[in-house]
Image 1 (tube, helix red, strand yellow):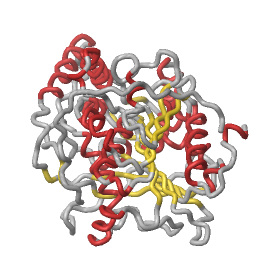
Image 2 (cartoon, rainbow, N blue to C red):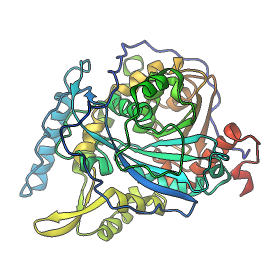
Image 3 (tube, rainbow, N blue to C red):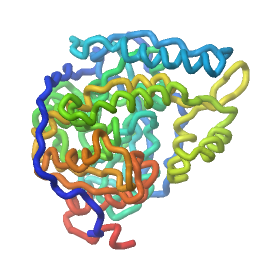
Length: 457
């Protein structure tokens, strides 16, 4: 295998245990639904790669119980507000998002919301060549499900692509196309546990029994209760399930695996927001200002342009986006924005508003709960940590936190540092990430252990 940098195992460390919540039960809304089924808000498209996989997009009902109550969204600053007035109003909104949270311990609130998923299925898949290998990708806060296609372009064209049957790319309720479907029904309060519960809801109630080239309906069919109950206990009969999660998606995928470990074979965690509980280390005193900066940055973000071309041109001039691979940026614009009307003019607008991105950032406790439970994650689940390799890249916590974090559950765990990458590894270094995913899959799931993809280049 190609030599890559990784963190050696440090001396063991401890922390004061915290009180960890038990997630609410997971089940979809009762049928029949009293409301009409939504349509896909974006037209069908071909994937941004030539690998022999077919793309389709689907909708499913999210977990019916929500951990947080419904709260109306704060008002946005009026267009007539001056720069100073706008800044003051957004500071007030940031404080409001912090204050309206309320108790993190609830009995749940019924609400019908929707998730979207992209399915990529291998074109030559047949019963005789099926491996059952299923990959699931969960995005970071602020990104649509299509953001993974710059990674999939390399991965699915690699030797690993020949043993991958299906790929599913997830979309949280306030992201991408799901955000457009749920517009008007999303709360000003959100708990990350609900994304983990929605992922589990997809896995036990909607994911078909086996990979297949058979076309699926836009609205995924709900499985019989007996099948769902069997999966909770025994896992999948005809799938080997690998979850790949970035940042917010890494934290919530890990929580899903902590809830129902039998469903998972591997977790590939791309710099996940899994953080040592804050009351155990003085360096965490700085975490609140960091989160506040993320919230304010999201609230201040521009979300409307005269066209997609103008949006792309604007992003290309930004130092933040200049660090991205060009393919990732093009996907973000083409699939993360949509055309709509504003005062009678056609404009391009972000599918996920800055308000909802800020709401997701304002939740800062699930990341600690997941860390606290990480040492007891089922040892059968392979853990692969993919973390920044850029010199001086920020860490979740004081210096040295990443090295300690990747060894919290040392059994069946490996880690790799992606050279030159910061936190946004899939956006900045999709090819290097794809090569590492390929190597991991071939080393752990191929009947024959071939040379790594990196060694072939």
